[in-house]
Length: 122
Figure 1 (cartoon, rainbow, N blue to C red):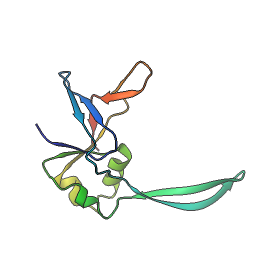
Figure 2 (figure 1 turned 180 degrees about the vertical axis):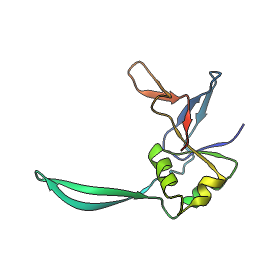
Figure 3 (figure 1 turned 60 degrees about the vertical axis):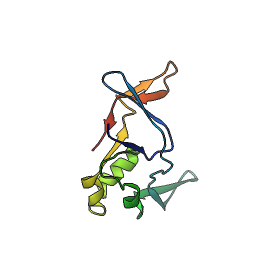
């Protein structure tokens, strides 16, 4: 079985097609995007900013096992794909996925997500 590395702060429960549950605890490392806000003005006295995201310089160090499957948030996965020119080696040498919290989500009676049936890559 391949090693899963969870770079989110939350435990991830994956339910396989055979019904087996794989629990992936947080690794202790969290992959977060850097945020930059630019003031755009205000609407009715409410400040409006344009937020942009970028992949931190130390990103490459977090994805150090080319055999592992890394789990990150969907926004982080999307950012990694859009900065391919900046860090092309990340997407070429490792598998980076996000839990499917949409159609693949498993929910409890109150509608809270308790697991996923799929991983997403883009």
